[in-house]
Image (cartoon, rainbow, N blue to C red; front, side, top):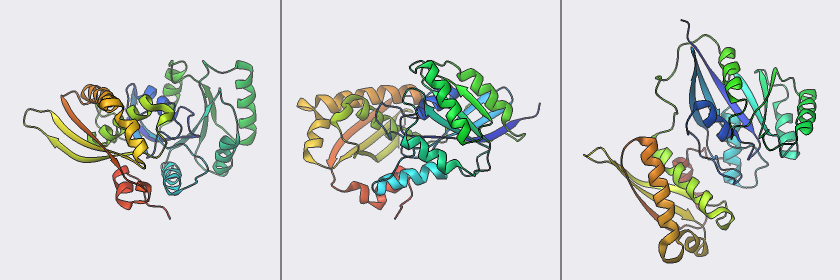
Length: 297
């Protein structure tokens, strides 16, 4: 049988549900998700298989108006993730509707030569008549070849979307082995899982300005892995929040992250977390390298 393989760039505003959709299409977690906007910072690829087709799904950071260097680097990573794509998928939050952020992306997509598909997500939460209005309005602005209504959270419509994506891929050999689901290294995945737990457990208490730096990553002789990570925050008050009373919060974050990593890596994980106050960490070139982002002037 002829193999098919293609690059699908998934773009959209922050919190549109891009990472949740990529995870749903792959069938397992390859990108972290949280209610916090701009959770995805770098380009991540999920690898999904549907019959003879391999889908290389690029999960990009949410596109927004950048305010500082980290923002500019994330937006650059988002647009960079669309380069060489066989197909561009614009994901729009069906519940949140169309606003300035979506309009900005629509304008930027004008004139793109790649086929454009529209995915209205979160249909389980959205007002149904409004969904049709959104679809009509967006299709009037851009020439979308296809429009889909899905809920990445519940899975509604995801199978149909995956089947259609597979049918649209060009004939080409698969780029990755059948059992590979992501291009992320285990080291990078470990940092992302810990950051996800920070967001999920601290919610609005912890500002956006935090990052995970991997200090050591070692394979042990017994097959387990030992990981030492530094949680960087900008102020002592933020360090106190992450630690929690008597260190209870950081212990809970570590336990959840370790449990999830052990399941994802299918082996024991020894995770050690430290919190460091590092003012202006988002102006450090070395940190950007560790995050997988380009330094943007």
